[in-house]
Length: 337
Ligand SMILES: [Zn+2]
Image (cartoon, rainbow, N blue to C red):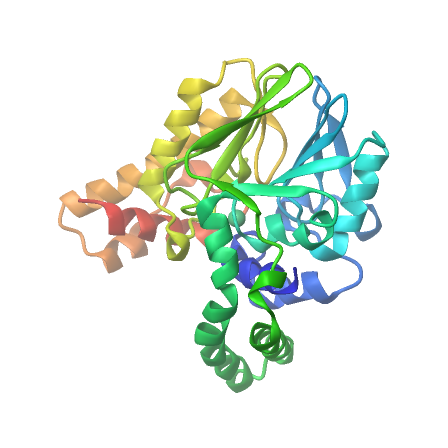
């Protein structure tokens, strides 16, 4: 849906370096590749990867899609953006013509739910309670927050952002809440879907990327879709304005690592498909950020001094280090005791 794609993309600015790039990525007919998928050309944004057990990963322009082909129906995880959702459906149809009956949203950001408007025509959309709450609140949030951003964009002479904010405000004024393609079946802790001989587990985790995060585990295929609770070799975005938390990331990752077998295949929200070792490497990054913040706080360092000096050279080659590392460190400092 238009607004979510835009609104949450700003929140997920994690993946693109500037608001202008975000707007360009949305407005341009040929997609601007995101940092993690820079090797794919605009006319070749999709990459399909079979993972065994009838589970597939589908890379595109937003958060990684996962899908499972059951004996009677297909379940999809995340829908990227509205404009490329028909392309996602085509990719799935190239594997199987079975009906797409379920769409699970890992969280509310627009690069994961933007295509819901397309999927809701044929699939039941499921997600954590907070995903629905945040999506339905977006018109009010936009009307409250965007006029100030619009003024800033006008002052800065940024035509693209001026248009972006104007369009969003217009949309927020007009949209009927019941027309927002939010999940229709929501849950608070976990549930399972049974399709053929596969059991698909959906777990809500402690607040990490947002306060509505879910991960999906295919028991028989041993494939785990982490949503944005895992950015593979990419500095994550911790959306503290949507209840996200650096320490929460650790709790969430530990919960997952305790439940999933060592041989599992892991689909991150962004970046390449990997394994449990890849997931553990990401946990180590979060642990190192939290540790650095805690040490600084314990030593009486001010927030300002900490953010000026903090550096974790081991992660400098992660995409987005320049753009998001300090924000991760700030979140960790604010939570340190
Ligand atoms: Zn996200």
